[in-house]
Length: 76
Image 1 (cartoon, rainbow, N blue to C red):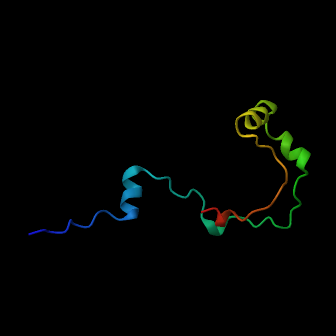
Image 2 (tube, rainbow, N blue to C red):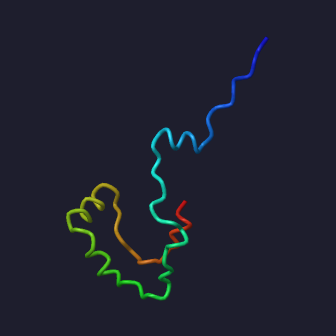
Image 3 (cartoon, helix red, strand yellow):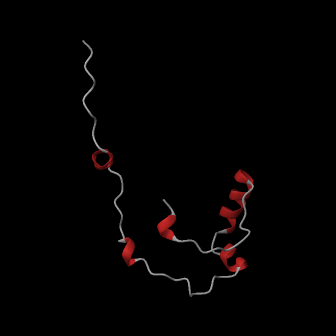
């Protein structure tokens, strides 16, 4: 008769086996910087080298339009 396959490894075991990166910073240690002002768009654009900006535009037609704050805990 047909026998069901044994249950495979858990997600945690697979992550450990494949060498998934572990969190370098505890989420509780992330500082809330919501009170700090955001940098102007021109200054943000200048943080990216001109060659990189040109390549982003050439390959993806991408450019910086706004500066926004996001919660790093909600990235996943």
